[in-house]
Image (cartoon, rainbow over all chains, first blue to last red; front, side):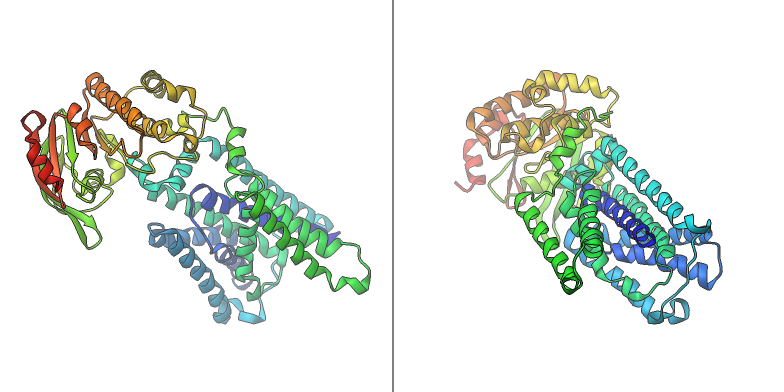
Amino acid sequence: MAYLIFSISLLLIYMGLAQLLHVQFGMLGIPNFGVVGFWGFGMYGVAVFNVQFGWPFLFALVITCLLVAILAYGLGMLILRLEGQAILCATLAFSAIVTLLVITEKWLTFGVVGLGTIQYPVRIGAATEIIYFMLLLLIIGSFQLAINKLHQSRLGRLTIAIRDNEELAASLGKDTFKTKLILFTLTSCLMGMLGGLSAPLNQFLTPNMLVPGVTFAVWIALVLGGKENTFGAMLGVFITFGLFDILVETYLPVSPEYAVMVPNFKLFLYGAVLVAVLVYRPAGILNNRQAHTRWPNADLS
Amino acid sequence: MLNVTRLSSGYGEVNVLNDITFSVGNEIFAVLGANGAGKSTLLKTLAKLIPVTQGHIEWQGRDITRAPAYSLPAQGVAYVPQEHNVFSDLSVAENLSVGALTGSRTRDEKLDEIYELFPRLADRKDQFAGSLSGGEGQMLAVSRALMQDPSIILLDEPSAGLSPLFVDTLFEKISEIRQQKSVTIVLAEQNATKTMEIADRLLVLSLGEVHLLKPVKELDMKQLMEAYHI
Protein backbone atom coordinates (compact mmCIF):
# COMPACT_ATOMS: atom_id res chain seq x y z
CA MET A 1 0.00 0.00 0.00
CA ALA A 2 2.80 2.43 0.95
CA TYR A 3 4.49 1.75 -2.40
CA LEU A 4 1.24 2.40 -4.27
CA ILE A 5 0.80 5.75 -2.50
CA PHE A 6 4.43 6.62 -3.29
CA SER A 7 3.89 5.68 -6.97
CA ILE A 8 0.69 7.68 -7.30
CA SER A 9 2.30 10.65 -5.56
CA LEU A 10 5.13 10.54 -8.10
CA LEU A 11 2.54 10.26 -10.86
CA LEU A 12 1.01 13.50 -9.59
CA ILE A 13 4.42 15.18 -9.64
CA TYR A 14 4.86 14.11 -13.27
CA MET A 15 1.35 15.35 -14.08
CA GLY A 16 2.27 18.72 -12.63
CA LEU A 17 5.46 18.89 -14.69
CA ALA A 18 3.52 17.98 -17.84
CA GLN A 19 0.85 20.61 -17.07
CA LEU A 20 3.54 23.27 -16.70
CA LEU A 21 5.24 22.10 -19.90
CA HIS A 22 1.83 22.40 -21.59
CA VAL A 23 1.81 26.10 -20.68
CA GLN A 24 5.40 26.57 -21.81
CA PHE A 25 5.31 24.61 -25.05
CA GLY A 26 1.66 23.86 -25.82
CA MET A 27 0.50 27.42 -25.22
CA LEU A 28 3.60 29.60 -25.66
CA GLY A 29 5.70 27.49 -28.01
CA ILE A 30 8.81 27.50 -25.76
CA PRO A 31 10.53 24.10 -26.19
CA ASN A 32 11.89 23.67 -22.68
CA PHE A 33 14.11 20.60 -22.68
CA GLY A 34 15.45 21.46 -19.27
CA VAL A 35 12.49 20.26 -17.21
CA VAL A 36 14.74 18.00 -15.13
CA GLY A 37 17.04 20.95 -14.46
CA PHE A 38 14.34 23.06 -12.80
CA TRP A 39 12.79 20.05 -11.07
CA GLY A 40 16.19 18.77 -9.91
CA PHE A 41 17.32 22.19 -8.72
CA GLY A 42 14.15 22.41 -6.65
CA MET A 43 14.60 18.93 -5.24
CA TYR A 44 18.27 19.37 -4.31
CA GLY A 45 17.68 22.97 -3.16
CA VAL A 46 15.15 21.86 -0.56
CA ALA A 47 17.32 18.90 0.42
CA VAL A 48 20.45 21.01 0.91
CA PHE A 49 18.67 23.71 2.91
CA ASN A 50 16.76 21.16 4.96
CA VAL A 51 19.47 18.58 5.62
CA GLN A 52 22.72 20.56 5.42
CA PHE A 53 21.55 23.86 6.89
CA GLY A 54 18.76 22.48 9.08
CA TRP A 55 16.14 24.93 7.77
CA PRO A 56 12.46 23.98 8.21
CA PHE A 57 11.01 22.31 5.11
CA LEU A 58 8.55 25.07 4.19
CA PHE A 59 11.15 27.82 4.55
CA ALA A 60 13.59 25.77 2.46
CA LEU A 61 10.89 25.28 -0.18
CA VAL A 62 10.07 29.01 -0.40
CA ILE A 63 13.74 30.04 -0.67
CA THR A 64 14.37 27.32 -3.27
CA CYS A 65 11.39 28.47 -5.34
CA LEU A 66 12.73 32.03 -5.25
CA LEU A 67 16.15 30.81 -6.39
CA VAL A 68 14.61 28.78 -9.24
CA ALA A 69 12.56 31.83 -10.28
CA ILE A 70 15.69 34.01 -10.37
CA LEU A 71 17.50 31.31 -12.35
CA ALA A 72 14.59 30.93 -14.80
CA TYR A 73 14.32 34.70 -15.21
CA GLY A 74 18.03 34.99 -16.00
CA LEU A 75 17.91 32.04 -18.39
CA GLY A 76 14.77 33.42 -20.01
CA MET A 77 16.40 36.82 -20.54
CA LEU A 78 19.24 35.06 -22.37
CA ILE A 79 17.32 32.57 -24.49
CA LEU A 80 13.71 33.61 -25.11
CA ARG A 81 14.58 35.86 -28.05
CA LEU A 82 16.27 32.93 -29.79
CA GLU A 83 14.79 30.47 -32.28
CA GLY A 84 13.11 27.27 -31.06
CA GLN A 85 16.05 24.94 -31.71
CA ALA A 86 18.42 27.26 -29.86
CA ILE A 87 16.06 27.37 -26.86
CA LEU A 88 15.87 23.58 -26.93
CA CYS A 89 19.67 23.23 -26.87
CA ALA A 90 20.11 25.95 -24.24
CA THR A 91 17.59 24.45 -21.83
CA LEU A 92 19.01 20.96 -22.35
CA ALA A 93 22.48 22.36 -21.58
CA PHE A 94 21.08 24.10 -18.48
CA SER A 95 19.75 20.80 -17.11
CA ALA A 96 23.08 19.10 -17.82
CA ILE A 97 24.86 21.86 -15.88
CA VAL A 98 22.51 21.36 -12.90
CA THR A 99 23.26 17.61 -12.91
CA LEU A 100 27.01 18.21 -13.19
CA LEU A 101 26.94 20.71 -10.33
CA VAL A 102 25.13 18.18 -8.16
CA ILE A 103 27.83 15.61 -8.93
CA THR A 104 30.85 17.90 -8.53
CA GLU A 105 29.84 20.15 -5.61
CA LYS A 106 30.26 17.38 -3.04
CA TRP A 107 30.66 19.80 -0.09
CA LEU A 108 27.02 20.77 -0.64
CA THR A 109 25.32 17.78 -2.23
CA PHE A 110 27.59 14.85 -1.26
CA GLY A 111 27.89 14.12 -5.01
CA VAL A 112 27.32 10.52 -6.08
CA VAL A 113 27.23 9.38 -2.45
CA GLY A 114 23.78 10.93 -2.14
CA LEU A 115 21.97 13.32 0.18
CA GLY A 116 19.35 12.42 2.80
CA THR A 117 17.29 11.84 4.67
CA ILE A 118 14.68 14.44 3.80
CA GLN A 119 11.75 14.28 6.18
CA TYR A 120 8.13 15.13 5.43
CA PRO A 121 7.24 18.67 6.57
CA VAL A 122 4.87 17.27 9.20
CA ARG A 123 4.67 13.71 10.49
CA ILE A 124 1.23 12.39 11.43
CA GLY A 125 2.08 8.79 12.04
CA ALA A 126 1.03 6.27 9.42
CA ALA A 127 -1.22 8.80 7.69
CA THR A 128 1.71 11.06 6.73
CA GLU A 129 2.10 9.65 3.21
CA ILE A 130 -1.64 9.77 2.52
CA ILE A 131 -1.93 13.36 3.71
CA TYR A 132 1.09 14.33 1.61
CA PHE A 133 -0.54 12.60 -1.35
CA MET A 134 -3.74 14.61 -0.73
CA LEU A 135 -1.69 17.81 -0.65
CA LEU A 136 -0.14 16.94 -4.01
CA LEU A 137 -3.60 16.13 -5.37
CA LEU A 138 -4.78 19.55 -4.26
CA ILE A 139 -1.82 21.26 -5.91
CA ILE A 140 -2.24 19.40 -9.22
CA GLY A 141 -6.00 20.07 -9.13
CA SER A 142 -5.25 23.77 -8.62
CA PHE A 143 -2.82 23.72 -11.56
CA GLN A 144 -5.53 22.20 -13.73
CA LEU A 145 -8.10 24.80 -12.68
CA ALA A 146 -5.61 27.60 -13.32
CA ILE A 147 -4.81 26.19 -16.77
CA ASN A 148 -8.52 25.95 -17.62
CA LYS A 149 -8.96 29.59 -16.57
CA LEU A 150 -5.88 30.59 -18.54
CA HIS A 151 -7.26 28.95 -21.69
CA GLN A 152 -10.44 31.01 -21.41
CA SER A 153 -8.72 34.29 -20.60
CA ARG A 154 -7.33 37.11 -22.66
CA LEU A 155 -3.82 36.09 -21.56
CA GLY A 156 -4.46 32.55 -22.79
CA ARG A 157 -5.54 33.87 -26.16
CA LEU A 158 -2.40 35.97 -26.27
CA THR A 159 -0.17 32.97 -25.53
CA ILE A 160 -1.74 31.05 -28.43
CA ALA A 161 -1.28 34.10 -30.66
CA ILE A 162 2.41 34.25 -29.65
CA ARG A 163 2.85 30.54 -30.35
CA ASP A 164 1.12 30.89 -33.72
CA ASN A 165 2.90 34.00 -34.94
CA GLU A 166 5.02 36.02 -32.54
CA GLU A 167 5.88 38.76 -35.03
CA LEU A 168 2.23 39.35 -35.82
CA ALA A 169 1.32 39.41 -32.12
CA ALA A 170 4.04 42.03 -31.53
CA SER A 171 2.69 44.14 -34.39
CA LEU A 172 -0.70 44.15 -32.63
CA GLY A 173 0.73 45.88 -29.59
CA LYS A 174 1.64 42.88 -27.48
CA ASP A 175 4.95 42.79 -25.61
CA THR A 176 5.56 39.18 -26.55
CA PHE A 177 8.98 38.86 -24.92
CA LYS A 178 7.72 40.14 -21.57
CA THR A 179 4.72 37.78 -21.70
CA LYS A 180 6.97 34.81 -22.47
CA LEU A 181 9.50 35.78 -19.82
CA ILE A 182 6.89 36.16 -17.06
CA LEU A 183 5.15 32.87 -17.85
CA PHE A 184 8.43 30.99 -18.37
CA THR A 185 9.72 32.25 -15.01
CA LEU A 186 6.49 31.39 -13.20
CA THR A 187 6.09 27.91 -14.69
CA SER A 188 9.78 27.04 -14.23
CA CYS A 189 9.55 28.20 -10.62
CA LEU A 190 6.58 25.87 -10.16
CA MET A 191 8.62 23.03 -11.71
CA GLY A 192 11.19 23.77 -9.01
CA MET A 193 8.44 23.71 -6.39
CA LEU A 194 7.37 20.26 -7.61
CA GLY A 195 11.02 19.22 -7.32
CA GLY A 196 11.07 20.48 -3.75
CA LEU A 197 7.90 18.56 -2.99
CA SER A 198 9.46 15.42 -4.53
CA ALA A 199 12.35 15.52 -2.06
CA PRO A 200 10.46 14.02 0.94
CA LEU A 201 8.90 11.41 -1.35
CA ASN A 202 12.32 10.19 -2.45
CA GLN A 203 13.90 10.88 0.97
CA PHE A 204 17.39 10.09 -0.33
CA LEU A 205 18.67 11.92 -3.41
CA THR A 206 21.37 10.84 -5.84
CA PRO A 207 22.50 12.53 -9.09
CA ASN A 208 21.19 9.63 -11.19
CA MET A 209 17.68 10.94 -10.49
CA LEU A 210 18.53 13.97 -12.63
CA VAL A 211 18.88 12.17 -15.95
CA PRO A 212 17.45 13.66 -19.20
CA GLY A 213 15.02 10.73 -19.13
CA VAL A 214 12.82 12.72 -16.73
CA THR A 215 12.50 15.53 -19.28
CA PHE A 216 11.85 13.09 -22.11
CA ALA A 217 9.22 11.20 -20.10
CA VAL A 218 7.32 14.44 -19.49
CA TRP A 219 7.65 15.44 -23.15
CA ILE A 220 6.46 12.03 -24.39
CA ALA A 221 3.46 12.20 -22.07
CA LEU A 222 2.57 15.69 -23.32
CA VAL A 223 2.92 14.74 -26.99
CA LEU A 224 0.89 11.57 -26.39
CA GLY A 225 -1.92 13.28 -24.50
CA GLY A 226 -2.09 16.35 -26.73
CA LYS A 227 0.30 19.24 -26.20
CA GLU A 228 -2.22 21.97 -26.95
CA ASN A 229 -5.12 20.51 -25.04
CA THR A 230 -5.98 21.54 -21.50
CA PHE A 231 -6.20 17.94 -20.31
CA GLY A 232 -3.62 16.42 -22.67
CA ALA A 233 -0.79 16.58 -20.13
CA MET A 234 -2.76 14.73 -17.46
CA LEU A 235 -3.98 12.07 -19.85
CA GLY A 236 -0.47 11.54 -21.25
CA VAL A 237 1.08 11.03 -17.81
CA PHE A 238 -1.78 8.76 -16.80
CA ILE A 239 -1.06 6.51 -19.79
CA THR A 240 2.76 6.51 -19.70
CA PHE A 241 3.42 6.60 -15.98
CA GLY A 242 0.13 5.31 -14.62
CA LEU A 243 -0.63 2.46 -16.98
CA PHE A 244 2.84 1.39 -18.07
CA ASP A 245 5.17 2.27 -15.18
CA ILE A 246 2.81 1.52 -12.30
CA LEU A 247 0.21 -0.96 -13.50
CA VAL A 248 2.16 -2.99 -16.05
CA GLU A 249 5.65 -2.89 -14.54
CA THR A 250 4.67 -3.22 -10.88
CA TYR A 251 1.27 -4.86 -10.65
CA LEU A 252 0.93 -7.07 -13.75
CA PRO A 253 0.22 -10.57 -12.38
CA VAL A 254 2.80 -12.79 -14.06
CA SER A 255 4.54 -15.96 -13.00
CA PRO A 256 8.15 -15.53 -11.75
CA GLU A 257 9.74 -17.04 -14.90
CA TYR A 258 8.13 -14.32 -17.05
CA ALA A 259 8.66 -11.47 -14.57
CA VAL A 260 12.04 -10.65 -16.07
CA MET A 261 10.32 -9.86 -19.37
CA VAL A 262 7.93 -7.31 -17.91
CA PRO A 263 10.18 -4.21 -18.16
CA ASN A 264 10.88 -4.97 -21.82
CA PHE A 265 7.21 -5.70 -22.45
CA LYS A 266 6.40 -2.33 -20.87
CA LEU A 267 8.86 -0.54 -23.17
CA PHE A 268 7.38 -2.37 -26.16
CA LEU A 269 3.86 -1.24 -25.21
CA TYR A 270 5.14 2.28 -24.55
CA GLY A 271 6.72 2.50 -28.02
CA ALA A 272 3.76 0.89 -29.79
CA VAL A 273 1.26 3.31 -28.26
CA LEU A 274 3.47 6.31 -29.01
CA VAL A 275 3.93 5.28 -32.66
CA ALA A 276 0.20 4.59 -33.05
CA VAL A 277 -0.70 8.00 -31.62
CA LEU A 278 1.85 9.83 -33.78
CA VAL A 279 0.52 8.07 -36.88
CA TYR A 280 -3.21 8.34 -36.23
CA ARG A 281 -3.43 11.39 -33.94
CA PRO A 282 -0.36 13.55 -34.69
CA ALA A 283 -1.63 16.34 -32.42
CA GLY A 284 -2.06 13.89 -29.53
CA ILE A 285 -4.99 11.85 -28.23
CA LEU A 286 -6.78 15.04 -27.21
CA ASN A 287 -6.04 17.53 -29.92
CA ASN A 288 -6.37 21.28 -30.06
CA ARG A 289 -9.61 21.38 -32.06
CA GLN A 290 -11.43 19.66 -29.23
CA ALA A 291 -9.99 22.12 -26.75
CA HIS A 292 -11.51 25.03 -28.61
CA THR A 293 -14.94 23.57 -29.11
CA ARG A 294 -14.98 22.81 -25.42
CA TRP A 295 -14.98 26.53 -24.66
CA PRO A 296 -17.52 28.02 -27.08
CA ASN A 297 -18.40 30.75 -24.60
CA ALA A 298 -14.85 31.70 -23.68
CA ASP A 299 -14.42 35.23 -22.36
CA LEU A 300 -13.49 37.44 -25.31
CA SER A 301 -13.42 40.68 -23.37
CA MET B 1 1.88 62.65 -41.03
CA LEU B 2 4.55 59.99 -41.56
CA ASN B 3 8.02 61.29 -42.37
CA VAL B 4 10.73 58.91 -43.45
CA THR B 5 14.19 60.42 -43.76
CA ARG B 6 17.23 58.77 -45.34
CA LEU B 7 16.06 55.36 -44.16
CA SER B 8 18.22 52.26 -44.57
CA SER B 9 17.40 48.80 -43.23
CA GLY B 10 17.82 45.13 -44.00
CA TYR B 11 18.34 41.66 -42.64
CA GLY B 12 21.51 41.21 -40.60
CA GLU B 13 24.43 42.48 -42.62
CA VAL B 14 22.43 42.61 -45.88
CA ASN B 15 21.08 46.07 -46.50
CA VAL B 16 17.86 46.01 -48.54
CA LEU B 17 16.69 49.61 -48.35
CA ASN B 18 19.10 52.44 -49.03
CA ASP B 19 18.59 56.12 -48.27
CA ILE B 20 14.79 56.22 -48.64
CA THR B 21 13.09 59.56 -48.05
CA PHE B 22 9.36 60.29 -48.37
CA SER B 23 6.34 61.66 -46.49
CA VAL B 24 2.80 60.35 -46.26
CA GLY B 25 -0.20 62.58 -45.52
CA ASN B 26 -3.85 61.59 -45.13
CA GLU B 27 -4.06 59.56 -48.35
CA ILE B 28 -3.63 56.17 -49.95
CA PHE B 29 0.09 56.01 -50.52
CA ALA B 30 1.11 53.13 -52.77
CA VAL B 31 4.51 51.46 -52.76
CA LEU B 32 5.16 49.64 -56.02
CA GLY B 33 8.12 47.78 -57.41
CA ALA B 34 9.24 44.52 -58.94
CA ASN B 35 9.90 41.40 -56.84
CA GLY B 36 12.80 42.03 -54.48
CA ALA B 37 12.53 45.81 -54.78
CA GLY B 38 12.10 46.12 -51.01
CA LYS B 39 8.35 46.84 -50.64
CA SER B 40 7.71 44.35 -47.84
CA THR B 41 11.00 45.26 -46.15
CA LEU B 42 9.93 48.92 -46.16
CA LEU B 43 6.60 48.12 -44.52
CA LYS B 44 8.20 45.81 -41.97
CA THR B 45 10.71 48.54 -41.16
CA LEU B 46 7.92 51.07 -40.69
CA ALA B 47 6.14 48.55 -38.43
CA LYS B 48 9.45 48.23 -36.51
CA LEU B 49 9.74 44.52 -37.15
CA ILE B 50 13.11 45.08 -38.84
CA PRO B 51 15.68 47.36 -37.18
CA VAL B 52 16.57 50.66 -38.83
CA THR B 53 20.27 50.78 -39.67
CA GLN B 54 20.28 54.45 -40.67
CA GLY B 55 17.88 57.37 -40.92
CA HIS B 56 14.71 58.35 -39.06
CA ILE B 57 11.00 57.55 -38.98
CA GLU B 58 8.70 60.18 -37.55
CA TRP B 59 4.99 59.58 -36.95
CA GLN B 60 2.67 62.42 -35.94
CA GLY B 61 5.65 64.48 -34.80
CA ARG B 62 7.19 61.68 -32.71
CA ASP B 63 10.46 59.96 -33.55
CA ILE B 64 9.65 56.24 -33.62
CA THR B 65 12.96 55.09 -35.11
CA ARG B 66 13.92 53.16 -31.97
CA ALA B 67 10.39 52.41 -30.69
CA PRO B 68 9.61 48.69 -30.22
CA ALA B 69 7.02 47.09 -32.53
CA TYR B 70 4.55 46.50 -29.72
CA SER B 71 4.38 50.22 -28.89
CA LEU B 72 3.08 51.29 -32.32
CA PRO B 73 -0.60 50.17 -32.15
CA ALA B 74 -1.10 52.48 -29.16
CA GLN B 75 0.14 55.29 -31.42
CA GLY B 76 -2.40 54.43 -34.10
CA VAL B 77 -0.19 52.35 -36.39
CA ALA B 78 -1.62 49.06 -37.70
CA TYR B 79 0.30 46.58 -39.83
CA VAL B 80 -1.11 43.80 -42.02
CA PRO B 81 1.60 41.38 -43.21
CA GLN B 82 1.51 39.75 -46.62
CA GLU B 83 1.72 36.18 -45.34
CA HIS B 84 0.90 34.40 -42.10
CA ASN B 85 -1.36 37.28 -41.22
CA VAL B 86 -3.91 35.45 -39.07
CA PHE B 87 -3.61 33.33 -35.93
CA SER B 88 -4.67 30.01 -37.39
CA ASP B 89 -5.37 28.32 -34.01
CA LEU B 90 -7.73 31.08 -32.90
CA SER B 91 -11.28 31.57 -34.15
CA VAL B 92 -12.27 34.52 -36.34
CA ALA B 93 -13.82 36.30 -33.34
CA GLU B 94 -10.74 35.61 -31.20
CA ASN B 95 -8.47 36.93 -33.97
CA LEU B 96 -10.47 40.13 -34.05
CA SER B 97 -10.43 40.42 -30.26
CA VAL B 98 -6.64 40.15 -30.15
CA GLY B 99 -6.49 43.39 -32.13
CA ALA B 100 -9.06 45.24 -30.04
CA LEU B 101 -6.97 46.52 -27.16
CA THR B 102 -6.38 50.01 -28.51
CA GLY B 103 -8.84 52.78 -29.35
CA SER B 104 -11.65 54.33 -27.34
CA ARG B 105 -14.63 52.32 -28.66
CA THR B 106 -15.76 49.06 -27.06
CA ARG B 107 -14.90 45.71 -28.57
CA ASP B 108 -18.54 45.00 -29.41
CA GLU B 109 -18.95 48.31 -31.23
CA LYS B 110 -15.89 47.54 -33.31
CA LEU B 111 -17.04 43.97 -33.98
CA ASP B 112 -20.46 45.15 -35.18
CA GLU B 113 -18.81 47.53 -37.59
CA ILE B 114 -16.45 44.84 -38.90
CA TYR B 115 -19.27 42.32 -39.40
CA GLU B 116 -21.24 44.97 -41.28
CA LEU B 117 -18.26 45.72 -43.52
CA PHE B 118 -17.38 42.04 -44.02
CA PRO B 119 -20.59 39.99 -43.53
CA ARG B 120 -18.74 36.82 -44.48
CA LEU B 121 -16.64 37.11 -41.32
CA ALA B 122 -19.81 37.28 -39.23
CA ASP B 123 -20.91 33.96 -40.76
CA ARG B 124 -17.58 32.41 -39.87
CA LYS B 125 -16.91 34.04 -36.50
CA ASP B 126 -16.60 30.73 -34.60
CA GLN B 127 -14.53 29.06 -37.30
CA PHE B 128 -10.78 28.60 -36.93
CA ALA B 129 -8.88 31.23 -38.91
CA GLY B 130 -6.64 28.48 -40.26
CA SER B 131 -9.62 26.99 -42.10
CA LEU B 132 -10.52 30.20 -43.99
CA SER B 133 -9.86 30.67 -47.70
CA GLY B 134 -7.06 33.01 -48.78
CA GLY B 135 -9.49 35.84 -49.46
CA GLU B 136 -11.34 35.42 -46.18
CA GLY B 137 -8.01 35.30 -44.35
CA GLN B 138 -7.03 38.58 -45.98
CA MET B 139 -10.39 40.10 -44.98
CA LEU B 140 -9.78 38.96 -41.43
CA ALA B 141 -6.27 40.44 -41.36
CA VAL B 142 -7.53 43.82 -42.61
CA SER B 143 -10.45 43.69 -40.17
CA ARG B 144 -8.15 42.94 -37.26
CA ALA B 145 -6.14 46.03 -38.18
CA LEU B 146 -9.38 48.06 -38.17
CA MET B 147 -10.16 46.75 -34.67
CA GLN B 148 -7.18 48.82 -33.50
CA ASP B 149 -8.96 52.05 -34.59
CA PRO B 150 -5.78 53.01 -36.43
CA SER B 151 -4.78 56.35 -37.91
CA ILE B 152 -2.54 54.59 -40.44
CA ILE B 153 -2.63 51.07 -41.89
CA LEU B 154 0.49 49.52 -43.40
CA LEU B 155 -0.95 47.01 -45.86
CA ASP B 156 1.53 44.58 -47.40
CA GLU B 157 0.44 43.07 -50.75
CA PRO B 158 -3.14 42.23 -49.78
CA SER B 159 -3.91 40.87 -53.25
CA ALA B 160 -1.09 38.30 -53.28
CA GLY B 161 -2.41 34.85 -54.14
CA LEU B 162 -6.06 35.92 -54.47
CA SER B 163 -8.37 35.21 -57.40
CA PRO B 164 -8.89 38.21 -59.77
CA LEU B 165 -12.55 38.46 -58.76
CA PHE B 166 -11.67 38.71 -55.10
CA VAL B 167 -8.90 41.22 -55.82
CA ASP B 168 -11.57 43.59 -57.21
CA THR B 169 -13.69 43.17 -54.08
CA LEU B 170 -10.70 43.70 -51.80
CA PHE B 171 -9.62 46.92 -53.51
CA GLU B 172 -13.21 48.20 -53.33
CA LYS B 173 -13.19 47.49 -49.61
CA ILE B 174 -9.85 49.28 -49.13
CA SER B 175 -11.26 52.30 -50.93
CA GLU B 176 -14.43 52.12 -48.84
CA ILE B 177 -12.43 51.95 -45.59
CA ARG B 178 -10.39 54.97 -46.68
CA GLN B 179 -13.52 57.00 -47.46
CA GLN B 180 -15.51 55.98 -44.37
CA LYS B 181 -12.79 56.22 -41.76
CA SER B 182 -10.43 58.74 -43.33
CA VAL B 183 -7.53 56.51 -42.35
CA THR B 184 -4.13 56.84 -44.00
CA ILE B 185 -3.18 53.72 -45.96
CA VAL B 186 0.32 52.76 -47.06
CA LEU B 187 -0.27 50.02 -49.60
CA ALA B 188 2.59 47.88 -50.91
CA GLU B 189 1.44 46.07 -54.06
CA GLN B 190 2.49 44.14 -57.12
CA ASN B 191 -0.75 44.84 -58.92
CA ALA B 192 0.07 48.28 -60.34
CA THR B 193 -3.11 48.65 -62.41
CA LYS B 194 -5.51 48.07 -59.54
CA THR B 195 -3.37 50.10 -57.14
CA MET B 196 -3.37 53.14 -59.41
CA GLU B 197 -7.18 53.08 -59.43
CA ILE B 198 -7.36 53.83 -55.73
CA ALA B 199 -4.01 55.42 -54.75
CA ASP B 200 -3.34 59.15 -54.43
CA ARG B 201 0.44 58.99 -54.70
CA LEU B 202 2.98 56.36 -55.73
CA LEU B 203 6.43 55.47 -54.55
CA VAL B 204 8.20 53.10 -56.88
CA LEU B 205 11.12 51.21 -55.40
CA SER B 206 13.86 49.68 -57.47
CA LEU B 207 16.60 47.57 -55.83
CA GLY B 208 15.92 49.17 -52.48
CA GLU B 209 16.05 52.79 -53.68
CA VAL B 210 13.41 55.36 -54.56
CA HIS B 211 12.99 55.29 -58.30
CA LEU B 212 9.89 57.42 -58.56
CA LEU B 213 7.69 59.45 -56.19
CA LYS B 214 4.68 61.11 -57.78
CA PRO B 215 0.93 61.73 -57.53
CA VAL B 216 -0.87 59.08 -59.57
CA LYS B 217 -2.45 61.73 -61.78
CA GLU B 218 0.95 62.98 -62.89
CA LEU B 219 2.35 59.54 -63.58
CA ASP B 220 4.13 58.85 -66.81
CA MET B 221 3.64 55.14 -67.68
CA LYS B 222 7.03 55.02 -69.35
CA GLN B 223 8.71 55.85 -66.05
CA LEU B 224 6.73 53.11 -64.34
CA MET B 225 7.79 50.58 -66.97
CA GLU B 226 11.41 51.57 -66.44
CA ALA B 227 11.09 50.97 -62.73
CA TYR B 228 9.85 47.47 -63.43
CA HIS B 229 12.73 46.98 -65.91
CA ILE B 230 10.23 46.35 -68.74
